[in-house]
Structure formats: structure tokens, C-alpha cells
Length: 202
Length: 202
DNA sequence: ATACTGACTGAGTGCTCAGTCAGTTTCTGG
DNA sequence: CCAGAAACTGACTGAGCACTCAGTCAGTAT
Image (cartoon, rainbow over all chains, first blue to last red; front, side, top):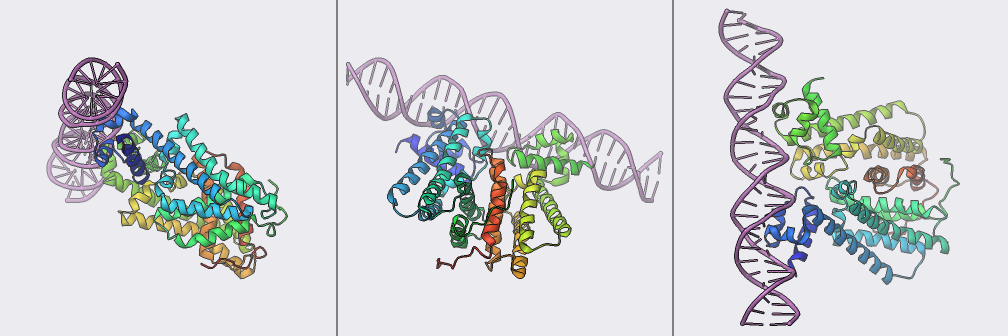
């Protein structure tokens, strides 16, 4: 493995678990066994290293979800939604660093001043919400999902599923047992039989 | 206003908007017009100042929700749930710093090594989720809420409502228009008519 | 008048940090 | 085998950090 890759991996792990400003370049050099200068030789600055990490995280997420879509192609839209939610939770267990880094404030703070960072975040966000939206759209075609606004419902499902991951990682509340409730809530929310006539005007 | 209070207010604002490690004691001294030593005279260390801020945030939150419970006492449990969600969103608009500080990683990181911090977070968490749970319990008594596990459903509703606030603050996605969807989702999730027989075993 | 107190000050201290750079080693095509 | 390029090194720098401490000062009790 090249030193560049080693630095990138160590940085991904450290930025995810400790955060950007609590991770020093000295730490990273120590973790990977390279000289501090090597980090700057390859990435230029600590901020650019963070952007490279974010790019790496985006690629991994996009790849993982693309692969999951290819494998399970059959089934109703509703089944696909449930699979997507389950896969999201499984991936968050297998590669926690991908989600931890998105649950920190570092990237959002940087995105306010850095256009590239903002772009990366938007791509990641669209990828994640897009999975759920795709399932909802398909579900509306085959009748397994009620005729709701797919983008907003996808956001709602995403918020719920991602919230469960957050709750688990926060360490304040035991959230592991919430899995069935979340899946059940997904089903209830999009069920074609459970929709009332809309009493809200705004 | 005493200098102690001025420091506490400035720190609440700065820790919420910039984060703990990005706020220097020099910054805080400048913001409040006191000497740097004064901060340490009153609070002892930057970490203890953070704990004082967290204590202050907890008091404000508890006070705000206690007041909202007293005012709107009538109505069904379902109506109470909707009111609680609406109040949560309103408070997040009026006093964003109370929520911003809870949406940062600082407190959760500190809570892993500091018992007092952990205690504060648990109290805040129980207060917030408790509001929703109380409404659900009442709703089950008057029949406006289905017989679900109140604690877990309260967590789910909390996750959704808080997720909306997070989404808004992240700046990546326009979330303002999601309000009606979230309220609708709350109703759907707890509706006594929308409950299917439970097909999930675990 | 004297002694004392508690709030407050700000220059100073030791330390850590991101980033630099002159120099060394490793790789690669001719 | 060699020359030049690319990769790599680690001592160094200056800025910024949390925190200290000797001392000032207004107010109060004696």
C-alpha cells in the first residue's frame, strides 16, 4: 500500500472518530509511520487532506449502494425501500467511519466556505436520499406505495434511518433495539391503506 | 449583568455556533470585554465553562417545555403530541443555540470521560423524549393513539422532529417546507386505524 | 486610619500546532 | 550505470493556545 493511501485511510479513521481539529498532522504521521512532511507533500494542507477524505467517503458510499442495487433487483417498491433501509443500517455497522464523518460538524462547517466540500456533501446526500426515493417511485408504479411526494417522503425515511444510526453512536441512549420499530414505521408511513385525506393546508 | 453571566452567555453562543475547540478563551474575553484571567477566576477551566454552559442549556430547555405543558393542558393525547412537535420546532427557531450545541459532537465526546456531562445529556434527552412519551401515554388512555410501546414511539417521533431541525441547520438541504410532512407522519405513525398486524418477529 | 477581601487584570509561560524546506533516498527511462 | 525526477524526511518556525500569577483596586469591617 502506498504511503498516500495509508495516510488517507488513517485520516479517514481519525477524522471520523476524533474529528478534524482534534486530529493533528503529527498524530497522522505517527499512525502511518511516515514523516510529517510526507502528508504535506501528497495533500498540500490539512484542509485539502480532509477534502480528499470526503471524496474517498463519497466514492465508497456510492459504490456500496450501487452494488446493493444491482444485487437485489426484484421485488416490489415497498420491499426495495425496506431493503434500502436495512442495507443502510448494515453498512453503518460495517463501515462506521463513513457515517461518523458525516455525523460530525466538520464537513458542514467547511462547506459554508468551500464550494468543493459543499458539492461533495450534496452528492453524498443525493445518493443516500436517492436510494429511498427510487424505491418509493417504483413502489408507486406497482401500487405498494401510496401516492405521496417521493422526495419529501424519502427525506423523512432517511431522517429516521439515519437518526437511528446517530442515536446508536451518541452513546447516550440504547438504540439497538429500535431496528424493528424503524422498519415498521417505514412501512406504515408509505402504506397505501393508511393514508388519510390530508387535513393540513399549508 | 455580572461578568460571570456575560461570559456564560457569550460562551453559549460561541460554543453553539463555532464549537468548543474552535472557540478560544481569548475570543471569549474579547467578546465580553473582560480580561482572560476573569474567565478562569469564575470557571476554573475551559472544560468547566463548557459544563456550566450545558447546565444552563438544560435549565432553559426544561423551563421552556415545562411552561409549554402548563399552558396547553386540554385536548387529546394526539393533539398534545402534535403541539409538542410544533413547540419543539418553534423553540428551535427562537433559541437555535440550545439545539445547535446539542447537535455538535463536543458534549457527546466529553460525556464519554466526564460523568457530570453524561448526566446533563441524559437529563436533557429524557426531558425532550419525555414530552412526546407523555403525550403518547395520554393518547392511549383517551383512544387517540394506538397501543404501541410509548418509549420507542416517542424516540421515533423525537428522531424525526429533531432530524428536521438538523436538516435545516446543516445548510445542505432546504428543509423548511418539510414541516407539514413531519406533522402528518407523526399522525400516521400513531394513528389507531393505520396499525397493521405485526409481521415482524424480532 | 488600618486591615482585609473578593473581583478582576494582563503580561508571561510552556506547549502544541500546521506548515516549510534543505537535504536524502528511491525510482525510472535511456 | 547514470542522471534526473519523484518520493520522502525531520528539524525547524512562528503563531496561537489554555492557563498562571503577582498585583491593582473598590468596597467593607474593625
